[in-house]
Image 1 (spheres, rainbow, N blue to C red):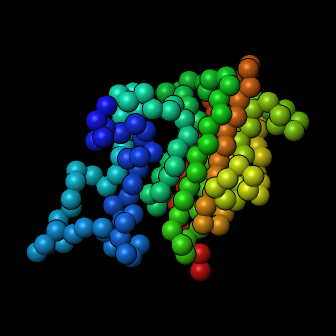
Image 2: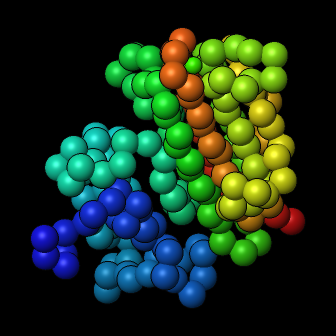
Length: 177
Ligand SMILES: [Ca+2]
């Protein structure tokens, strides 16, 4: 594999503003007309991500999210299939300084247990698994909007049996002020 080939979808999920000196400005800008878009689209579509993941055999769930907003879902959700057993997926959302992460988790259907010890969705205020836990959810129903500090982590876990359809998550980075 040459150095130009991605080994993970996460290595490609760099936003057009990521290396800019200002969050609102693109990293590079065409002259003389700065309004001409560079590249074919604003970011990777879900189909792009699926193709790249298939092509390079990337991890099937989880990732590092640095674009200012988007969606992600449990494995199988977009195919209307149950998530697999033994899933352990972590999505880490990393905003720039001055922004915080707003997260909505919708259409939840995860095996219910009294303390969510079998299958669960966990949201933490930070980017490490030991960061403060804000939510732990199983069963069905939406999770009310959760706002974290600059970084947020969502971990999805399933055990050996009793799968369901999982969840759809929508996040955005919003000014902290
Ligand atoms: Ca289960």
